[in-house]
Length: 191
Image (cartoon, rainbow, N blue to C red; front, top):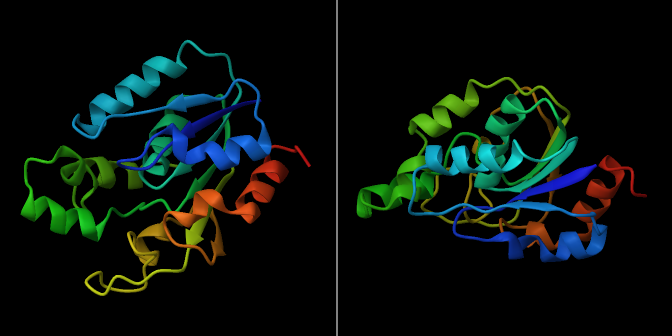
């Protein structure tokens, strides 16, 4: 089964170096996207990339990558499952603040709690096995509620159609977790 990686905002495929080195997925697909283009343009590019690939696929996504994964699993029946890491299903409060301070920064506009990209993703039915890893360490005081330093736990857990598992890491440490690697191997039946 092919593994598709989708990184978080302002990151790149390099954020999955530890996971990929640990699981050694054959011929992984990295769906990179730009922070200065709209979420729709990024999504269209991802769809175009995957439509020429043979499935089945398993998606591993970090943060905003998990929101893109909701759209992709709707588009492609070949998606057999998803593991999302610290995905802000209900958007990001930090992005909302950032959008007020820098209204021209497209990434902030796309991931505010009220953006159409986020609102529409919550309306999409999850059609495949999906594990959301909720990160529980971190505490930025200007974010309302428990958070991992970037995303609130309430945003990470607002869906009722995915499985949740809490891990005591912050938003960025989660991609370096041996426990996450073990979860991925079990889901991909590599152990």
